[in-house]
Length: 379
Image (cartoon, rainbow, N blue to C red; front, side, top):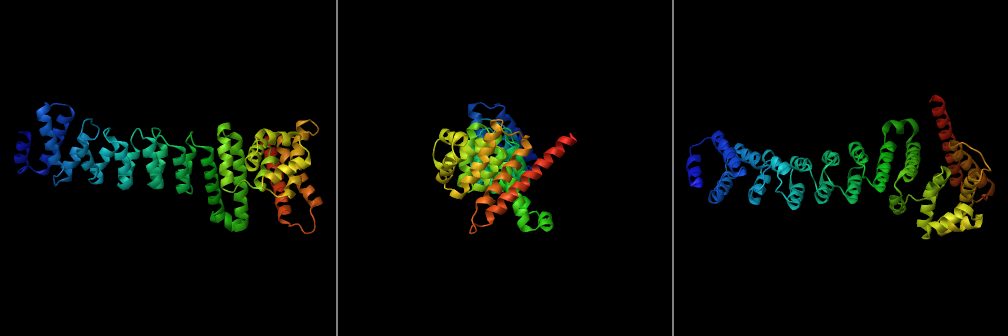
């Protein structure tokens, strides 16, 4: 009887009246006012309302059913396939939508529908992964700002790979406490590239110098990241650096000069495919030949062995109390000795590229020491 009365009535009712009827039937359905037999007819009535030509009617229906349980899946799916104004309340609020439903909405829905999905109070790892794969930067920021969103490490990496150049996405990623160190390093590179591409910096110092500044900043930030990263994440970070070609002799020299011995040891162990215990023993007490042999095992040029030997020797002297220096002075001290050693031992056929690099590192270390002294005096 409910269906028959509704069909007869809607023939003469205006859109406002039909919308009010949709609200009333939806509310009665949600509140369980119908008996079992009437509920079947009520479902049929709601289904007929899905075909109403007035969007006001369908929107009233969506708003009435959006947060309810027990709503038939077919009705919800039809509402989600309607216009944004009708689909969004359901996409954001319906507890009856499954992960598969939400993933489909993310895949084929409009940006407005995707925003509605992202605004849900709880998002599973699977739904978050779908959003990370296809959404634009602003929607990805909304995902990252949603404390109820469970996000897997692979999805964090995907967000960094797709939108790492976007400053808002970088900020939202870095604000997540569970962000893996490998993803933070990817963001370091993205920020460095943004710095290198900054027009004002390029115009002031030139393209090559801007790229050098950005590269040095990335190496320093990565070394700092490795220092503060949880111990369990360091192996993955080292492998990330190796796989991306960042685990170079230059990076390792910069790391050891600034005292990141643990990072150096973990990196050499990964490159040489030997135990960290053996590497630690070589760095702590091995002779120059042992250090050079380890460097060669890592696939680095044998000519780099003496440079690492000098750096390690300085740290040994400091640890043994044979050399006194403030922490900010050590990098400058090491790089000066490394550069001087290289100048003394290189042959006439050697390239000047390594020499320039070492002296640049020594200059950077001197500037860092000067900045630290200035900060201490200003405090």
